[in-house]
Each structure stands twice: as C-alpha cells, then as structure tokens.
Length: 243
Image (cartoon, rainbow, N blue to C red; front, side):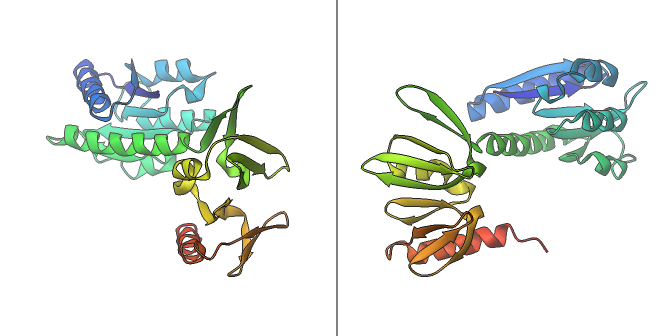
C-alpha cells in the first residue's frame, strides 16, 4: 500500500485530487490510500509522533496560519523522508520551495489535473522502487526480510541459494538463480557465472576470470557471462559516478 496525504483548505480541490488518485489506483492496480487535511496545523499535529505515515504529501502552498513551505519545513525537521508535491495558484513561492526538496511545484492552472497525474505517477514509481530495495524470502521455517544493500553476492548450489551478507552472515533457501536474478537485477546485481550473482556496489577489481569483492571475496566470472558482466558493470559505474 502507498499512503498519500492531501492538504488543502479547498474542499473541491480535495475531492478532485482524491478522484485523480483513485483513478490512478485503478489504472495501475495499486492499493493507494488517501487521507485529507484542511490545514497545515492539523497535518503537523497528526504526524508529530509518526512523521513517515505517508509516502507522498500533496500540499497547497497558500493556506491560513501556516503555509505550505512552513508546514513542509517542519515535516522535514521532524524527519519526513517521503515525496512532497506543492500546488499553488501563484509562482511566487516556487524558488523558496526548493529548500524542502519537493518533487514538483504545480501551478493550479487550466491544465493542473493532467500535470498532477503525471507527477503523481512519477512519485508512485519512485516509492515502489524505494520499497523494492528489500528482498523477502520464505523458507520452510520462517520469513526473512533482507536489505539488498547488505547482500554481497549470491551462490547457487543444487537449487539452494546462499545469500552472503556484508556482516558475514548467510541466509539460504530453495530456489533458482534465474528467479532471484529477475527480482534484483535492476538494483545493481550482476550475473557473472552460472552459479553466482554479485552486488556491483561491492566490486573492487576484476579480470576476465574473476572479480574481487570488498571483504576479500573472489568470485569466478564464466566465459559465457564475461562480456555482459563488463557492460553491466560499466553502466552501473556510469549511473553512480559522482562528478
């Protein structure tokens, strides 16, 4: 479920945005929850002790008492790390809004509903990607939730997968390397061998025959996978380069 908050003192706007969200939910077949607030004070009171209740907050800029930027600043100070989308009938606050890192600033003009749909879909996509960075696996005895960032590499031995973690721990369960590859490939994991997948974030060096991972692990690179491994690693490094 993705939890969305609407904060505006205009009842018609709240109804309109709720319908837009419901329509997106039907189109994407996602479970989207909507809760509305008529001013910043009530929203801050609600979230003071549970600031990350919502994944997305859509907020009017011009409200009585405390405006959108003031509300957003306090939310960020509380520790809110979700997406903020501002709507306003004026461009006046657009530059000032950058301080709270909104996903977008939408003018309430004739086309705002179309623009809001586009921005909301982008926000939902980002939330889904963020949520997808956890891997849930099921064994006969338990359910295991793992952060993808803590997995250094995965080994397959006779249809048993061994997930090696940064802290030295290992989780194992029955599955195929191909099935888990489909789930985690877009998150920086690269197939380098018929029996191995490595987390690109841990790769220190590599040759045609093997790659060295942080923690002094050596993982073989199969000839069948060598070219694709190199291409995907180069793409990963390009995507994560800091200039």
